[in-house]
Image (tube, rainbow, N blue to C red; front, top):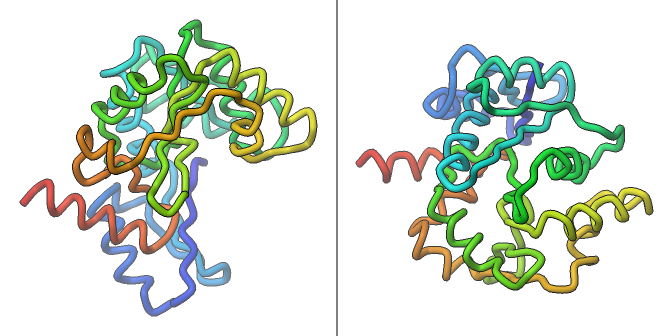
Length: 225
């Protein structure tokens, strides 16, 4: 079963957090594991998140590949159109680079977008801006004013990033930054610049923490008025 877990340190916030999650995604998929202090959002919720990311990406690129671990791939495949390729991770390491390697090997495009599945407000225009910024570089990666980067809302030259990812994993280095460190031409794109494509930077809102849920809910209210 596909599952995202949101850690909750303050148990008193659980009911409100779950209520807000059900405004964003399917109500029946949200539960609370008291022993682990985690709100869990299971298969239907996650599938909807994947569907949104796929729909946004399909407006910008010609090839879309979704990489998952079995049996998650079967759940995701059932939620997507048949033309979307859903494939299993090729390697056993616990690293996001495994998904990148698997997906990059299945597409023929020169340049690729590398995205998480928990981006409920991803804007196609932001992806278009990143692809435009990639020209002449190995990667175009958003960077916040405080120096934080967004390696999984970014675009890469496929061949160079694929080679760098394989080298990183073969060296037992598992972070996205380990792959990026091997690229010689990286363009960091200011998030302020990206406001031209996504004024509120909604594309970077995910749901890995209660604060992320708060932000997603607030952005949806702004959109709907």
